[in-house]
Image 1 (cartoon, helix red, strand yellow):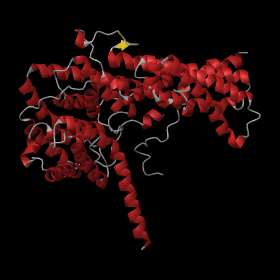
Image 2 (tube, chains in turn yellow, red):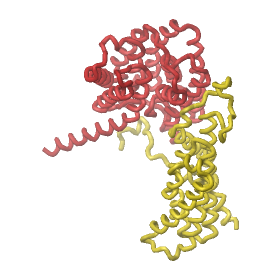
Image 3 (cartoon, helix red, strand yellow):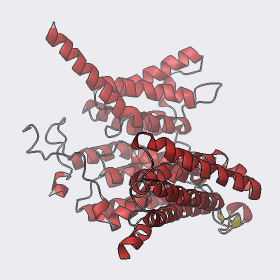
Image 4 (cartoon, chains in turn purple, yellow):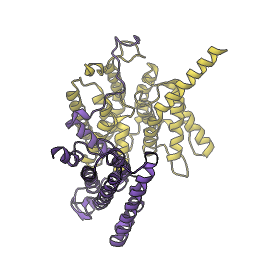
Length: 219
Length: 275
């Protein structure tokens, strides 16, 4: 039981898809200028990831290996279309803000990554837990990045003012850098940094090292 | 064990008396006249600004030095000294400290400190300041800044800390662009404002510019060309607002210029070997 539950818990923080596998970065950069878009995107991705993982896992013995990517993409794309239409029907403004990024969940490396790495080999129940865990792990990162970017970039959260702005007589001058894409790179980078301070086993071996003075010229 | 290997040792291309901290010390001495002129011109407000910048840099560099169990170099003084000469002292203090923290940590310390990074911390801080708080200007340079920084510049070129090729390439590129675009650019413009100072102490910083001779020419021409791209349409602007992004982008491309130079050199050598 514990091993099964680990599929759900591991990807939340320890094996987070964004900070450990660096998957799903594109949307983590694109939709995190405000918390509301980050939340919608998280929900959309989680609700696509779960049924597609379950479906792929259910028919895993019947998918020929040579065309498995096409089959996986077709399944994922079907759920993405459903999700896109759902957003257009019930949250039209939000769907306009997210523009192509809901449609681009089809090519989100996280969804295909879980299908390829996990659901293709595992039974339905672990696949469901793994998809839920990865969806929540991705959501956690998106919410953190979205909160930091909206709070520091506009001084508010979910459209509500939080910090006293200079233009209203306060002291906070919004950092417009936070509304630009590079800031998401920095924040995700800092998150990875913090993760690897905590979990030192995730640090990759250096590709090279600088030689000592005595070693120079020996090779 | 690995920590030991990363200790700043002796740069292989310089005479053995020039250890890492001595280079920074000489660099700092070259900055003193320019700083003195600016402090005299601006008065006590700039001294306070310098103190705040120094405390910020000292905090981050000290923290990283403690964690990495290394000593502090003289560069802890160099970074704030260059920064106060270019950044606007009238900004809210927290904005300056945030920008400087960003520049020192992300531009330099995470790569291993002075000499291991490919970005100049001051350039990174100033770029952060322009992007994070647009509309903020740079400092009005003291009238004698260029003349005060001249002895330091000559000294740095003379002892070959900075490359004359890199400096010349930038000036040639800017002069050529001035001729092509018809912008008004006289040789005297070199000595106005903080232009020469920025060129020598930021663009020619040996840590963040190319290290091969061909790479330096490419690097210098690139800075000149980027100045043209970033200038307003009607002419060539040589203020810090244009120079800083140009230097930042050029220093990102400097390793690529070096790789090209090394590849060309290898190709030439192989060709000569065959014939």
